[in-house]
Image (tube, rainbow, N blue to C red; front, side, top):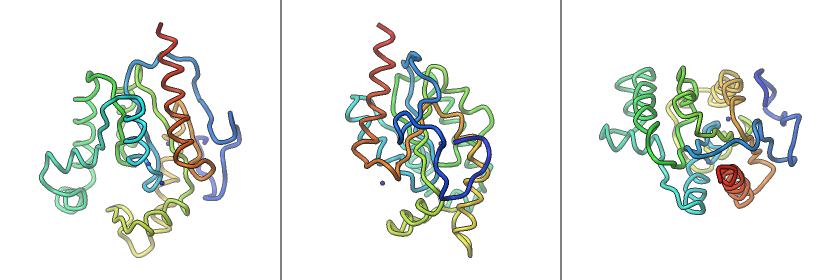
Amino acid sequence: MAELDGASRPASARPASALPASARPASARLPLDGHLVLVGLPGSGKSTVGRVVARVLGRPFLDFDLEIEKRAGRSVSRLFAQEGEPAFRAREVALTEELASAPPMVLAPGGGWITNVGVVALIRPPGRIIHLLISPDAALKRLTRSRVSRPLLRTADPEAAMNRLWETRAGLYAQADLVIDVEVVDSQQVVEQIAALARDLTAGLG
């Protein structure tokens, strides 16, 4: 299988804290009546996990890249090639602004969504951010096996490119309310932990 501290760390390093070992809530017992937003490196499983979590919780699911492709009538790769990354990021922000007042959903934005200045504040509160933690090396291996092509990794040295993505985004992923190490737990456990958090926090509203 789909954002830890503020500084970059080696690809093999794991989070220092654990509750349990594979999940670290950064904020607990907070009301959850907004979106659940899954963030993480490409290959972390955001879309895969998000679809299942949405089904379990009975919420709508939205994959940002697919929605942007549908509206633009072009693939993400073509949008990057024709318009450039800044224009694509602007589309992400516009979609986030549109969703900010929508009923609670499970959202899976692209890995670089969180680099948009102020985008987290559009969602949280009341939404919550969940980081699916994966090392750059493991993420690249997953993408290679799935033969998925990502614009920012289409370089002569994709390993170096993935490491750069981690180095520039690690501090932003640290804003997450929950961190789940997807290299430690299987996909079912990942889904269960996210669903449990959602139900636990929602119960606090009653």
